[in-house]
Image 1 (cartoon, one colour):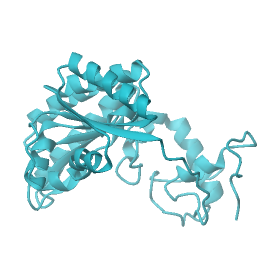
Image 2 (spheres, rainbow, N blue to C red):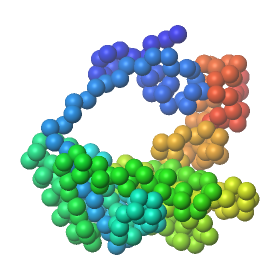
Image 3 (cartoon, helix red, strand yellow):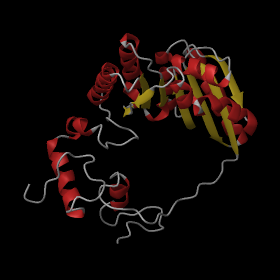
Length: 291
């Protein structure tokens, strides 16, 4: 039993064991107690939604917003196909175009200034129907489309399963990555809506497949492989949030190199010599000190 941190806001005492264990997907130990940090509620919160003529223009608007230093609390992307699904699922009439969902935190004057600045930026990139809200009920209404997107997308193909990708790239390469990915999805026979936390450079493609059709599963795997390899070539990662588990094992060596994986295996063996902690995840084999 070990304690990996203190109540101090920061520390330089030894290795960062907290991040090591948190990022291990349960393969190095079991976390039995956590200390969380409380953040104050901002004085004011505002939200905005805007439609765009293309995915590329929407992403370019996000990139420019970040480069100008506008302090966005969160910004989410939903493509035209996902909007179509949301309209059907929630009986909405949003234009079937890519959308960005923004949220701003700060003072009353600050969030107003942020929203006005973003509105100007989105207009430069073809944004339209910019809607801004400050009341909690209005903010919830604007964000509801993003919150229900996953369940709405499943209804595009009743009885389907969603094979969900999860890559993250540098913000400077996000527009290129999304545009190239769009080409793959247009050529696919499967419905493949896109949503993403584009403020982080992270996006997800929900590839809708019939799990009883091997040819559809194979096509989904090929789409996923192309998306991951593209992200890695652009200096990104094979998984920004979901983790490696079983499905991303083969991409780890491309992202980190064999030497880094050997080091991870040594750490795994040192902390879990009997291989009982979430066995078979992240690595296909674990090497001890002797290799």
